[in-house]
Image (cartoon, rainbow, N blue to C red; front, side, top):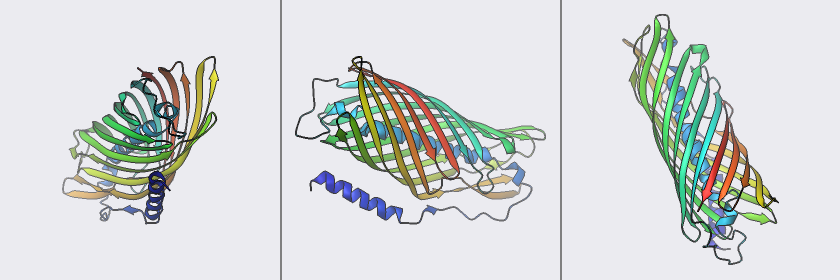
Length: 359
């Protein structure tokens, strides 16, 4: 048994051990509800913190998939093994651009009524092969999210900028990939009151890392790529004081830390049509949020205050998606992606269209 097989066995053993632990969601116990404050709870603050974390995770996982799998993996090296060396005469650099939209919905939790979020954004990136089997990439993601908590007459916008780095090392059919993300943004919230709108402006931040091990198994023009990954993100939002309206409140900063394991596989097949390559793939992943630390938010109105628990994901869930890719030449590719996230109190759907150029 070679070292890659040993590494994969160790990774799966760690995944099983972690998944057997009870999920942790550490929050301060809230005191008895203070009735005068309850109608003034800024629920969009809770939603914005969760949105920052989920957008960071989405970017991380897309960077990980880009580094480890997909149709482009076959052109990087010889995933079938056999000792063949990488084709160094091929394109060394690549750049890509994407436009995407996300629609998500969170169900009610404790004092949170539930929300609807719509995100639109774009990604630009550049990558290079710096040595045989070693690839790196840098990208930037800019997005705007509209948040609606309709039962509470509250809305917010989140403008988020994320900087991403990914890298991969190929050895025969094995690939180890790494992705890192740092993001920062601004949140503008509005809460309807009997005397007009109470508004607030504050900041949000996201940091995350993902590591993934995969095995590329080819069968003629088809492929199967099992994957195991571990992801960590920490999202935070700043404190704020509302302005205007009836009974403007202040709120403390909040944070969310989440560690998860993702276990799944990608399947794909390509056809050669009129000297162009059409590729279709799909994937599924089991998700275990084995640790979540969610802080509470202190909401104050004059001398009255209340602790409101932040919102998170259920421990178990699933990710699924599909991709359609058309390679017009060995240097130009167009693609469409769908990515879905399914949790007990959260559903998210993302559509992406992009173009990649190699030289």
